[in-house]
Length: 231
Image 1 (cartoon, rainbow, N blue to C red):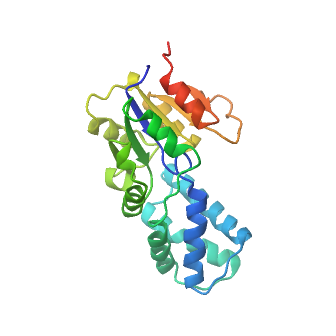
Image 2 (spheres, helix red, strand yellow):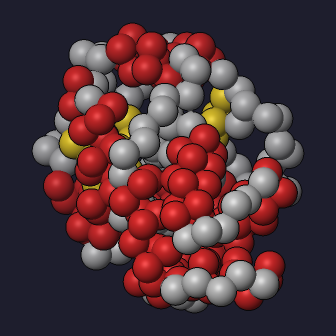
């Protein structure tokens, strides 16, 4: 096999983050007397995603992002609530939710023992650690590199350099990152000089000029890619 080390993104790659997000957000807003529907949940999700994109570009601090998304949401839809308190309740709710995407847990089990596997995530330390404990990711993974602990975010070179320094016998030529985010996982991997596998189950087009090592639309394909002999 061509790789020794596999870096997996978590949310959107192994975990059904949209499901967890919807449950955590709906529970939190209800606690503030705000009843949301699917349209409002989608609006929040889009706001949240746009701010995380800004974080990846270094345009906003994570500490601000965590409550500013709720400020924007309330202002946009005319709700009155304490955004910082909303942020606390949301993160607490989210920390209790960890749903594998269908087939993801089975993929991890199939890969166990074949590679040294690690989680790479931009999530919040407390929340992610609790979710990973609930999902028992220690069954499959050697460790998790959470940006809050690392002091840097994907896709920055600093983040990947710190990950590499923490993994014994790290070899760029024998490492691949697998993730659903082109701007975070794949761009970070490309810039750092490791192979990339874009998990793209919805068949989105690859931006012109962006070269990835492999595109997978299923977990079976990820397994076949990792376990092939390569060149």
